[in-house]
Length: 90
Length: 190
Image (cartoon, rainbow over all chains, first blue to last red):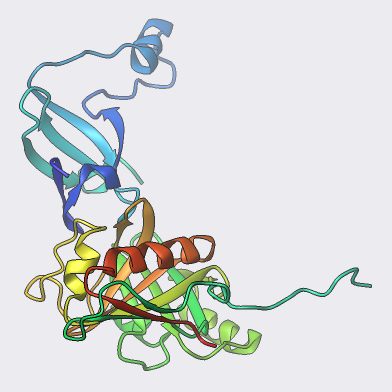
């Protein structure tokens, strides 16, 4: 179990306990934004090399959504925070 | 009119019992199906994560009755079955600060103990089980193999594992398998 993610509630856990959702950096457009803005929000994703923020769900642990900052090249994990702490979820 | 009688039986009634694995006596593992009394699942309402003192009143006073496993999330367990009145009394205590769900028939507790119990469980989970970081009374929700389980330390050499009922027998077999090198005595209620 190589990749350990240090959950802010549970401590170091293997990645098998988590479910990755994807990019945490994109912002939801306003409800009346253009079709292009919504298309980009729903479908278009970068494929970044290097540091990257993602949503991960600790499915088999505390069941909290986390924002994990990791490196897509080295797999190093730099920071983990509860997604709610950033005011992004209810 | 009921067409057929519902059969009440514990989840591990048909599970394997007896002695398995190594014949050594020094570090044998004991596996026990625990009483299916009550299991209550508590979830704090938004903004009410700090309910520890209130939640502790929901327990039956047993030493490890209240088991926290995440922000605003607890399991409350006990060996005695709860009547509907007992349950609604507990629910009233929480009012609208937390929701409570009866999981008594949904989750099963397995006791595992022995000098090498940490080595056995470490085969299935990556949680650090050392007593320095996993003190007596501490709980952690994790995977044992591919089965989700709540691990609670109940003593220096003893743990409880709580698992969804449908996975109980499968996990039981896995725990026996994981204990073979030390030898294991598996005992269900009857």
